[in-house]
Length: 404
Image (cartoon, rainbow, N blue to C red; front, side, top):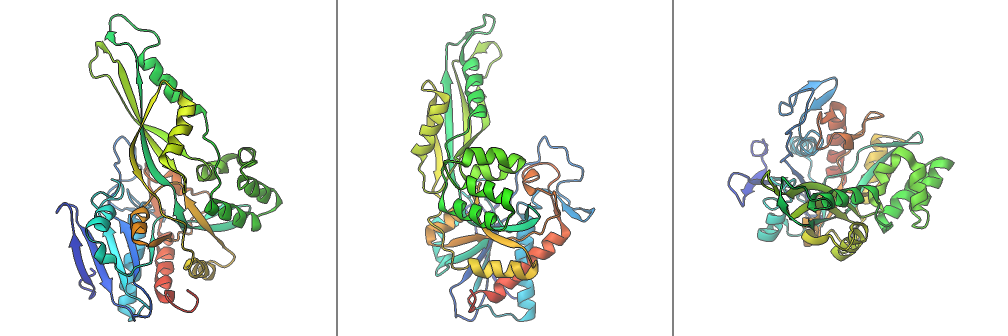
């Protein structure tokens, strides 16, 4: 489609079966190139029960259903639509526009952004700003509609926790052994929250929400932004706390358990992979010490993988993006977002590129997209795809202008 529309296109691949597509649209040369990127790989649907087939892109009840609808083929469709429209309308952006369809984000970028940045950094010469995932989705609170624009993200920090104990024959049970210690480890992680750290972007986000909220909600938001009051404020937030808690604490989630490989042998060792997400500005040792304090000294913790996150955000394009949202949805409140997850932005930041999570989706009240990402029945409203495509197109129009 891009080639037929007159774009320069190329592919780069670590594995020929998993290529990355790069396309360029020339601009006026009045601003640095702008990068638009998104990943086209998705996570599994194994052991999930779907109402609609997950790989047909079926439209039902005003939604596009399917794996990747939200994360993030819907976002790639917005970008592609905006680019094709820009080309067809003769739009000449202030700078070149570089589009990347990446093959591997869900697998941590080893075949996608991480590999491209390491092996082909010349593709991104001069780029200082990028639009990618994840941000721009609506967040309803106190009768106001907020649009969080991602400017920062947590850091990937995977740990392995290992417990040991006496092994033996399965016919003679061992009380308090390895499996008991494994259960105790998992229970300790489930029952304790790690300490509060309020980073600058999280503080800006909470204060921006407080300024646009009623008295009760404002008090909660300001409380979350105050480390001495965060715990109490999050309890007052009720169900809303699930959106804010990961923004002020490091987190770990037990995701893969390994222990024993034969029915009649009691294992002497068992391990758990912990999906750790580290707040900006903190280091792996900070997370390890916090988790060690919870699980006890008899649990061995190892660092498996650490991807440093972006540096302090460059907010110079933020006002342009907020202006687009205010125009498309008058009365809305755009706010900066610290993302609880990670994106390919951590790799592009190594080249000095600031990513803005800006895939705007005006979602119906009560639709929490976090309930569907990586889960069954992932879907996106058709109207939300149209809204996002229009917003990205306007970003191409305004990029490098007087209000940028």
